[in-house]
Image (cartoon, rainbow, N blue to C red):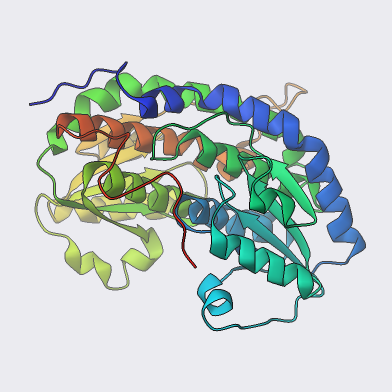
Length: 365
């Protein structure tokens, strides 16, 4: 069996670069985020449309929850094929359209942003590549500055994109409480990296897994989807992501004894639902991998992956910003998912940097 050796892959190095990449992203995009927020207010934006594919689409799902919760603005995920294949045009005069692509090269994302600008929308691009089509097509661009990403599997560009989206939500009306807290995101990511030894040890248990279910709810739904993608592209596992709420509406019939189920369960209003679902899953004999801070949830796991994230002070010594911690939790919580996919790929004898049939830039129209 292949042994996981942590110095051999670009993917692992890039996972470890995330605290530094997050600091750069937050510092470099701060002024642009405030400019976008100011222009959105000036235009009286009343809807946000997010345009993305793949990993970037999962960052968009995170932002969909965040903008609606913090800013009270309806958010939709774009349907690029209707633009590129069917020539659909929408009325977008009071829309903020945000295109997301780490490479900035996705033709369908760029085309939707261009068409939205022609239709009167205020358009923004979020990318890691200055000078790319997505950097030059919209009214304004925000850059990740994550540095080159050599592994096909995106890691640091995903979390940097999520951080920029969180900072943008914080800059808009309703996001004021998050503005100071957002600076602590790199610290949270660094703490999440301390789960590596546990993840590297437990991943071997699943070396023969061919399929699994990945669960999260509300803000962690994006984490479930992103982790499932990482498992599919690096480990060739059929990983099916669900919101824990949707999972109960039929997909729960998939559960049988020994089925691996990965659950991301951060503190907050969804914790009680996670606890009840875990009890049921264990009764059905599922093999539950639980990424959590709550000891009650970890005690129900077949394979617990505990996270110990710092309790960030509110600045006046009056406690912690527990509600705000939930809003940015997908950024540190996805890191154990990335590590799990990386080490499981190595145990399977696979190269997580070069998944078969994939390239770094995927061009769809």
